[in-house]
Image 1 (cartoon, rainbow, N blue to C red):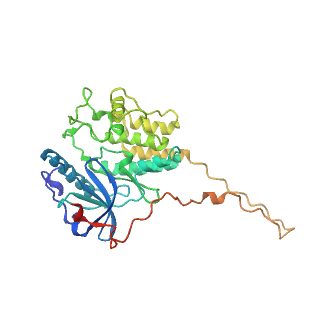
Image 2 (cartoon, rainbow, N blue to C red; image 1 turned 60 degrees about the vertical axis):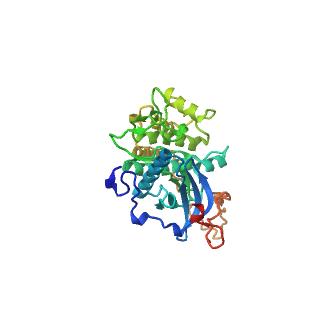
Image 3 (tube, helix red, strand yellow; image 1 turned 135 degrees about the vertical axis):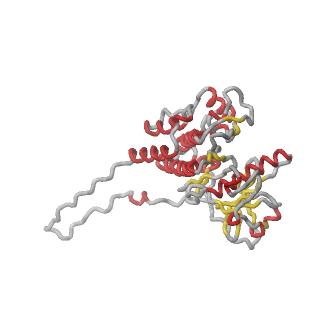
Length: 353
């Protein structure tokens, strides 16, 4: 990305004024997540419940420069795209420390949701609904020339009602360029596309060409996981899974899937990136599967002719079981975020610095 995008130039942090967070109005509450380079907290900004990502700067000049570059890229991406299936960006600041503020989603990660369900599976139509949410988010990113590169259940968040999935964490996202060489081994091994590895070596930091189809591969692994509610490449370490996928063309088994669904999954994780569908095609394939698998519309019940001999005929009550179609309250739904910052729940942002 060059200086013409209005976000940054040469690694400098030049955020548009409307996205600049005032740290004095930021309050930090309980920690809700942690990664290699950042911690995420529940918090408040201008009396709004938010998620606050505080980025660790690193301990060497090389690490500091690398992490700052990633932070600046992530902010640029978040402020560039908006979509109902992308976590909403609220703002960021770089001083006194690097902070990214987004909407707070209280439904937790897709990873946690699936693990809590085991050994049960998601209803297939719910799984496909989640997959459509993810595919729409990816279609939006790709339409802006952005590759996510780290699509996995940990980076997918659920709304409080557990009905909608939103994509988060743009820390590894990059703008796609025909001329740019990008870093191999980017993302998380188990969900990573084979072309992210060298055919000769797994040396970290190697530069090579790849395109947006790396996200289609990761999507296939996530879709397989949504349907089976099992860890892909179970029994293998992350590195073993990556090696098997890259060098032995091993994939999770799709043998027990319906033919149409198996076709979607296997087409997305094909070895040749160019043979994989794009996300517009993936969305259409998922819609086609839902349409084909929908139960037929019930035929209307014929109204019996009126019996004039008795005006007081007793008709049978409604069929039992109708109430089972009404959604039950999910007791596992997380409680609503804390609303009052005046009782010491949230500490001032500067105390975390």
